[in-house]
Length: 495
Length: 127
Image (tube, rainbow over all chains, first blue to last red; front, side, top):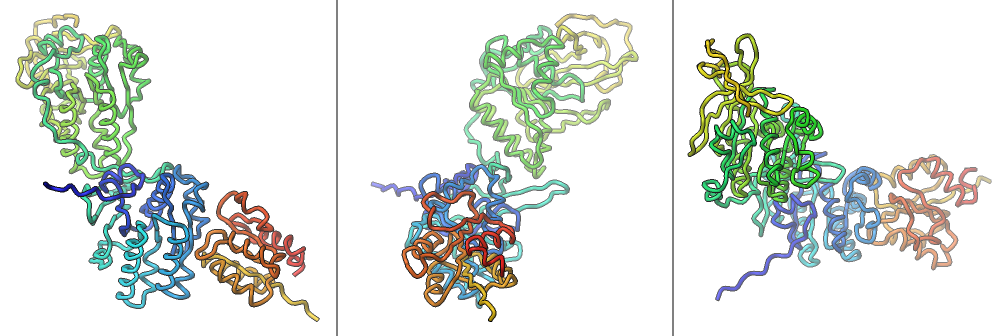
């Protein structure tokens, strides 16, 4: 009979994303190096961990070896939500170790740390400024001996130790990394004009960390770590049965639904591709409006227009029911400013929303919002694939818009990569010049494994809603801007 | 005959601040001794006369409250003024009575000298 090993005991950092990539937190009685350049967030990470640790009944001792005084550090931390002064000094205790280090060297520092752990019954110890200990060490051997003593101390007292240092890993191999149980590397860099912070686990004994770079932000809430979205989503199979069967989801536009042979298949993903002002958002809102009318749960997730503005616009053009849907709890409108470098935050918000609402219909307005928030553009196809997979797994019928860069062109470039592979249907919207007027054109380019009407229709936005007209009935080359004049006048049919 | 300078004991584990205070008080005419924890401070107190103790709260080995309690229970130092220097906004209720005054870090040199003068019966100001 095989015996199951008990799970290793861990102290969570209390920083949700960090605990996720650390597989639950720091192991009890283990020693970790947290390294990175000044301003990367090491001190905040350590203090946040201390206060979260104290809030769950632990005792933390924070030893500084730096010139920064505790009062200056507190002044900076005071604005952070996690900083609880009432926990000081009973549960979080701060001492300066630099004078002992200066006067008597590393052995005095070890004595000071040992005394502090015992006196305050510390279960978490932070040594901030390991570089000072390293610099005051006469030989490299002495410094390794110091680390070994800290390790022994951690083991005997069952105290988890975080050693903060400025050392840059890029400069080469650091022997102290071999002596500790984990190394967390924080970075703070510029990508062109954009500031990007990341955290990376270089080493983690006894754990299976989520490897690679993860985005990191410092706010008044403290440090926020967003594990890469593509590493967080389950890789379960797609609900093929749902996609293949079930009632189609209509737009509530009779002509358009007829073109789609009833609507969109449940669980499918549809791209609405079009130029600016071509009617993409309103078509998406029409899709949601019809869902609300049928009593379904719907979600709008967008980046550019605020929900109030969109609802007002829908009211103006006769796309009704959404405001009431919000009030009835059927419709949820989520708006995000596309913040630089936080694609994982947006991804998490989207996933959390759809997991909590479990909507029948989702409208993602402006997928480019994700791209603008991307830290590394080369990640985008992985991010989109992961999101698409999750949408399919949850069986959510999704419509997303993607903006073409050219208003009038003979070719159409699909600006989104990665997601298009998971997209079953494509609807094209664009402007064309026709008889000295600019008209909106709608056409279905693709419906996977289903019949559809390939005709081009004029899309007209009126005070009574969206209407489709047969303006281009006998013309060709309309979409590429080369429509031929026809003697046939457009036959109008109200949608 | 010139009056002897008053002797101040600074007890603080924050090296930079203790050094700074020492220089500042020396320039103001005080004799200054440093200790980086409460136990070392008690050893210095046992060796000679100290007119006033300026102590940090959180320190290794022995903290400011323990130092003050030890001084208050020793008749040799019972009446020696003690000023607590703390980074925390409020003094804890159980510390009341142990200290003659509380200074919140960071404080200005003027406030320090004023508080010391008050504790020393205005002698510091005259120095």
